[in-house]
Length: 424
Image 1 (cartoon, rainbow, N blue to C red):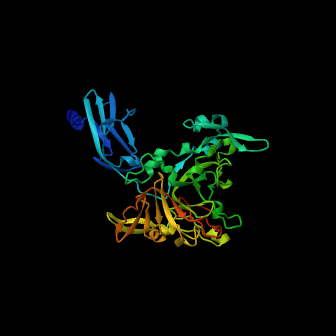
Image 2: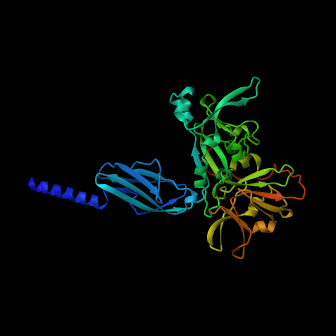
Image 3: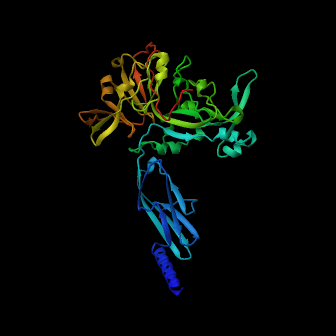
């Protein structure tokens, strides 16, 4: 018995010694000293202490993180945080004050085919017996309800209540998930870079559903632009939790009014402004490549046309080696014009900056780099001076006078793939 007590006390002494040597912090997560996190991703940090602390202070680069007093903290860096940082936690107990630090490298996010967010789950709430009266407190306490939305002009006029859609896609979250290796995003709203699909979690319906049918109902419906989505609402359960857009929102059809909307998919896009009198826009999703696009077999069966996809190649120039690139001439299909060499082109950035006067030959040597978020002309393995433009949002086809041209029978842009879409 005495030997057992001696052994136990020895183990206890060793345990205490290790704890004291480690500053009374028994364990830290991550256990590695150096941690790499991509902007937009999250990493959970935590410590375990010998005694219950009387105070816990977390700091990032010596600046105290307010309102965090627990032993765990989740760090979600933004694009502006790319670089090296130090995250520290200091705990104080009866044994003293001790600190654990991590060296963090925040890396630029890598472009993917889409971003994904969710609405509160109204379908599950209703099936669980949820009521209209309790819906706001149960699901939407963090959101602002809008009343008196004109739902039907009647007669009689019908008004409903709903939640403005921009509330569900946070600007800072999207900015953090958007590649910004040149640190050019700044305070711009990256949500304008994306087209949007809302999808039902009851039956999988989205605006793309009819596109996947193989009967006479098959139709190509483009995804929403941010300025369209921005004006919409998510209605309450008395109106089937649908996305709703007022009749004043140009270009939105009934297929975008998704019942029991749950998923929000966002796809990087670049618009092309045609040379027609209306200045109509064709939206190209840059993730709609020959390797990643929504199956258009059903559309071809009905209409005899395929959709136009991008071929992604790798190029090297200057300090860039084997980077993914999409040549700009691929945006100029006969869905835009059948005489692309008859025009000049203007490239417009998200902040309104533009470069213009590019010829069709220039467009052949110009590339959009999805992982770096810029367009540039390349010649002889080098960047052509004065051609770089960050965060391109629009290509304009410049004509001396508007042209009359029928685009309706031409191949439309492909839709980028985000999930396994099944026919309706």
